[in-house]
Image 1 (cartoon, rainbow over the protein chains, first blue to last red):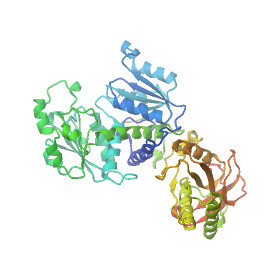
Image 2 (tube, rainbow over the protein chains, first blue to last red):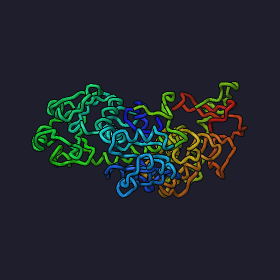
Image 3 (cartoon, rainbow over the protein chains, first blue to last red):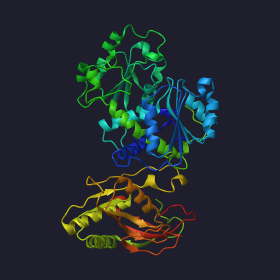
Image 4 (tube, chains in turn green, brown):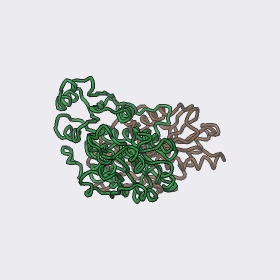
Length: 328
Length: 193
């Protein structure tokens, strides 16, 4: 593994499978009376959040604490950032406080990459979502959930599984990370969205694109519904919400046309009635709550593999590991 | 997983397959004797080879007592005291039998007892899982050179070694053959076992 986790594209297949396998072991800790490991005792993890988030921040915090790391939560609201402090000065402050890892969420795409490659800080940088770019730990927990539900688990990748991502691809960092990671793990990915919500340049992505949901349902092993990110929409991308829900929303009738074993996924937060109906969201085939649980295990695995030794875990191709630069 | 044989001559076998079988039978009998019937015994092997030894011991205990003996594995990686000296390591399985460890006589099983640091880590790991009635330790080989106040309750073979030697346990399940080899350490003192 590289020293930072900025993009799902940084991970080789072996890196990704190592993270998923490690997360399986981490998941067992949740069943014990003492849900804590001493592994990262004395290490400091800073959660640097420039953008609102509940589940991701809590998930990273729980993961770091279960590994006994000290956690400092830093949110831009109510900090010097609202007084105009730059990312650089914030980073230098964190470095001065001895942060071993910085988990960053930022409204600008590329902020984690800047932080990792600038030389401002010595620790590892973990991208917890940047703008409309990437959200690699979300993709990892999605892959983990799919692997548990659709394959034999431990040691497996997702070869041959068909995953459909539906909705606001244009604004979705979850979709970008998932497309990269899922194709690394051998899955076939299909994006479904109205033409206005498909990003320019999607031809270069390792996936297919469909403008209609119904034709792909019957061949999907997993259908991931993405939230319509109204807060990022500065134009009219579709006529009405009702029309969007009718064409791209997942309801009970559509779910019934999916294969028996197929699962419905949602990274949260859900807009019930928009991209997913309450009937589907509350059905046992919907993994939304499971995804949250798995998120803690995945983030424990990532923090352990980045910080648990003198350097990040070495997978089969150590020569490819670069210490300083992170082209992504 | 070095065999320590590259530069310094062929490693010498100190235990062969029949010896290992005999030694495990003896340890199983000792466990039954010391635990007065072994009805609350639970075996936990330390990955990798300790797990296979624990399973073999469990099979022998079942033969002797006619009762199923719960057996599991305990990965100690995240409790090691030398984590920061090497790159982050992949984890092995921890599998605690459904009976749980609370109130039971837990016998930890490992292949080689050396510095004692692995067992120290195992005791810490065990403490986070539950509260056994007592904990004992069974090892196939005790090669000495303890760095902590730890000793084994059941020892397959005491093997006085120098620090320049390596002890390599091979088991069919992992290595395709049974045996314990004594070799000379290559120039760099790297591996722990």
